[in-house]
Length: 150
Image 1 (tube, helix red, strand yellow):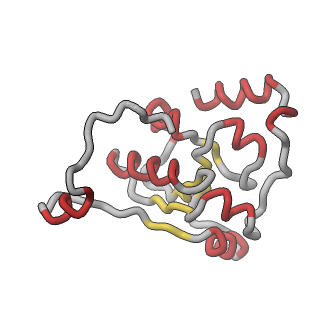
Image 2: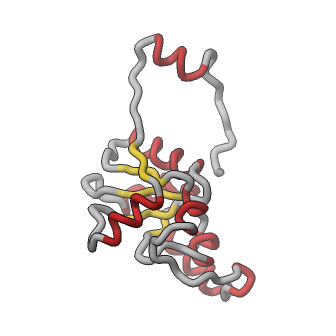
């Protein structure tokens, strides 16, 4: 997912961290169906942020969502408002939780993870773009999307 240079691991896992009284934090979460209900009420109290790669986003995404790939988090953090609420999702939930963790460590507090990510969103009533096969997306559109986040 873009973070392959592991420097170590926590012996005893999270339980040992917690038992040692070390600081910890949590990330709020919401199901795709709950998010759909909130969106249907006429307004969401935040913004949907898709942390998948630009080509994934171009092929199919939540209408009105911003594409903010995890790969570019460190170079694009200035695009996010610390006061705004963000509903983060990726394909299955792994990258969005990593994104949430990184953002929380840098002082962003209004973050909500969409459980099970795009896979759950696809099955929900959340408004989505029409699907475009990635091989049919014009290269200049892909290049523009990558340029926008690079």
